[in-house]
Image (cartoon, rainbow, N blue to C red; front, top):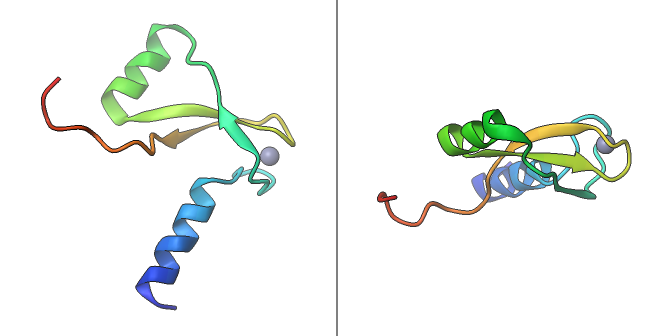
Length: 69
Ligand SMILES: [Zn+2]
């Protein structure tokens, strides 16, 4: 497997549900200060699977814009 293929595969996995593998996932609402803190510190956000309704955390796919906040 080439590096490009591995990257594409990792991207595919990042876009699919870890429980059932369905790729219809969508961003879930962040609830409360704790989840906002998770997002702020680790750049992760909650997602929900459209097939099995499992909720899970994924890295925020948007790149950081600069180092300042
Ligand atoms: Zn699922």
